[in-house]
Image (cartoon, rainbow, N blue to C red; front, top):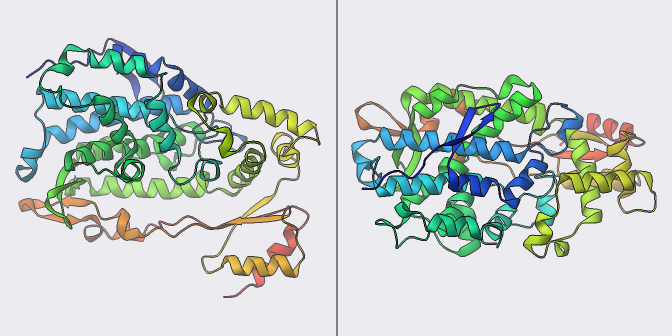
Length: 436
């Protein structure tokens, strides 16, 4: 047994969670250049042009994720069912202290690899692995080596745990099981998967919970607020319904079903009013086109080049381009900076296909500069609602079998078309008259 080596003698006041406590090792990471860069990466990209309060950053979000994930870890290690007892470390043990440390460091690291304005151009510039690929590179870089060297020298790290590589564990927990397998070909153990899901999980992950709460508070759109304290209180480690008793999943006690319903509804309404709001989509469209005209995958060749880019650099370049017609991306920069003649973003009917839009574009002789669109793969509701629910008499069921409301909340993103203001009436007439 070891003494828990989280001496929380330092704190930052957060607008969502109040005081966030951290120790000397976490301070080293927070003070590092890669983490300080997050001060200059907006959480909601350029959404502040529509919602003026949306100026919060990945910096405070990452602190919030660490705070939430720690609460969740403490809860799932305290309320343990007999059938998963042997998987879970006891509070006060070396394993407990070690994995709590890994979790907190991974929470701080999980967003280090974001490009300026977060997700706006990452799909195009970062490829399939996304920002998680750069998160791994930054964790491995010279910028964080002093942090890891100091952490490895901590006395309590060496007791009973010398065989583990703490940096390797931080990396895998920070990006999640799927991305870790894509990047390395390796899988996580059942316990490692649980710890990682506390951060990256699609339903219960602290990342998702914090951004809903923070985005709602910052924008003033209250739909994203829900009783997350109740959700955490009812969180459990449960045996998988599909994969057998030796596979673990984050789940919920049956008394927490209502908090899950509230979370899913909050997520749905926040997508409608912020993330998938037409004005936000239009500005993101222009910013994305500007960034693709001025930045390329080839420019992001090393960690130094990557970390040199932040929102402030892009905004500075955007201002110059808006005033100089000779610079790449001038047209889109002008539409963002001067808010003039921006494209109209219109959500499409589920039945409409890319083939329909190509036919419209051809018939009306639209140029590539006058119309664009994006289609998303439909999300399967069954996947998101497969988490287990602990019922009385130690019965475990899937969430979709315990709540009619969960099944009724829409889960897919809209498909979008973007049209220049000079041609938007033609598109509107087409959409109104179109029939599958």
